[in-house]
Every structure is written in C-alpha cells, then in structure tokens.
Length: 169
Image (cartoon, rainbow, N blue to C red; front, top):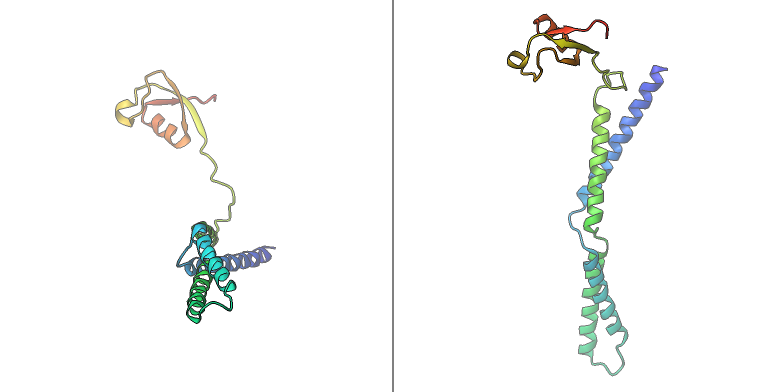
C-alpha cells in the first residue's frame, strides 16, 4: 500500500513540475501588454481605414487609392500586433498562476516527515509563584500569583525555586 502511495506522490510531483514549467513559460512569453483602451483604439483606426478603403470609388485618384491602401495596411498591421497582446490584468493572472504552481511544486519537493498533523501542543502545568520571577526570568508575576506554563518552562521555574507546580491540576 505504501508503494502505491509513493507512486502517486511521484506522479503528483511530476504533474506539479509540469504545471510549474508551463506557467513559467506562459509568464515568460508575456513581454508586452496592451490595455483594453489601446486595443480598442487600434481597432478603431483599423475600422476607419477599412471604411475609407471600402468607400473608394472609380472617381478616386490613384494617389488617393494608394494612400488609403497604405493607411489600411498599416492599421491592419498595428491591429494584428496589438490584438493578441495580453492586458496587464491577464499578465497578473499569469504571474499568479506561476507563483501558485511554483509554490505547489516546491512544497511537493520538501521531504515528507510522515505526519500530516501539526505538532501537538506542549502539556501545560499550573502552579503558584513562591518567589518573584521578574528579575531572573523577566516574567511579570508577583509572589502568590497563579499561572500556567508549558511543562518545560514550569519545571525550570520549579527547579529554580520560583514556582510551585500544582500536582492536583
């Protein structure tokens, strides 16, 4: 059963690595961005040039036709160059996908400690101060005050003669 689990983990790491590499390639491919407004402006210039080209008549001079044809071709070229550029928002989405894929992949590469639960909390011990710990331990408690500490700290205070652990708690 553990062998199957190991194979699944290896596949998961490979998948995560592939996702990371794909996201990295997509992000690196974005060298320029174009805002929605820039795309709309390019589309308008193209539409205007196409309208001018379509409205040519037999009475237009060859120079007019050539100027309008050149304007149309320039606008078409500009539109084709900008329409496929991602917006800044799309670039941010690619960056986010890259960051998430990288984190997932790096997390998968970390050695598995075998435990999926968090570290259990230290046992807490209650007791009462018999000497003020303020000077030596920099704790703001007074003599006679009750407190609760992690077992290790409570035992250290007890052994030093500052704290009496309540064995009934």
